Each structure stands twice: as structure tokens, then as C-alpha cells.
Length: 189
Image 1 (cartoon, rainbow, N blue to C red):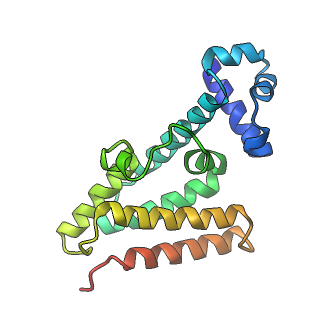
Image 2 (cartoon, rainbow, N blue to C red; image 1 turned 30 degrees about the horizontal axis):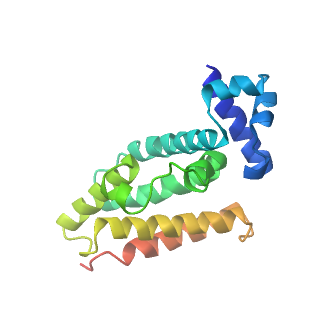
């Protein structure tokens, strides 16, 4: 399908040249299409960026839905592992989901409160379940979600900027930091 080919090409250009290198002309060349053919699918670069972001969120949401842990705390720990795996295994889709300046990106807090992010909605449900079981404190589900995701994204940003000596060091520090973040909201037994 042509639209998928365009998104794949745009993802590759984003990977190798960054956002500044992403142009309609370069995407067209990589796809073997004319720039006008790209415009039949995307009105402009902004629309292409929004499509890349949406594609990244689809990949992230699939990972979240694939978590099968029944216990909500185990599910939340598995979520942090899924986030780490997504950042390392599909870095450009991850970056498209979380770092591109997309005009249609979900906005905190309104879009999340309104349930416009299926992944965040699933996270908040699991937090509510853990709270109902007496395992998390009374901090709002949205605030816990923001604390955990902001920390995770910050660590990935540091990794992208090569602030860790290796992927292994990053992964170890990521897991430890996320465990401490979740523990901050956990009620002591």
C-alpha cells in the first residue's frame, strides 16, 4: 500500500537524518514517487509527522495490550519492561510516538482524562486496580501515570543523547529507576 510505503520511507529518513532532514521531496525520492504523489496521501509535512506519531502510538499500544500479567502491580512492572523494550527495539517508532512535535499529539491532561490514549487508559485502570487492592497510595491515577511515563521518557532522552556508557547500563539504570518510581507510590505491607 502506497501510504504504508510513504510512512516507512519517512521513518527511515527520520532515523538517519532527524526531523530537519525529513522533507516531502526526500520521502518521495526514497519511495520512488513524485512529491505530488506524496501530497495525495498527506497534505503537508505536518500531516506526515502526525501520521508518523500515530504509527508510533499504534506500535506502543499493541505492546501495552500484549501484557498479560493478571496482578496489577506485576502488570505495571511489565509495562516498564515493555517501554524499555520498545525504546531499544524500535527506537524510531518510539521516538515518533513520544518525541516528534506533532500538532495532533495528545495533550496533558485533557486528552488523557478524556480517554483519548488507549495505552494511558489501560495504565490508569491497572493503577486503580492496585489501589483498590490496597497496594498503591491515594495519588491520582493520572498523576502516577505522568510520574512514571515522564521519568521513563526522560531516561530514554538521556539514552538517545548518549549519556550512558552502554545499552546494558541504560537498561539496568532504567529498570532500577522505574522500580523506585513505582515503589514511591506503593503502600508498605
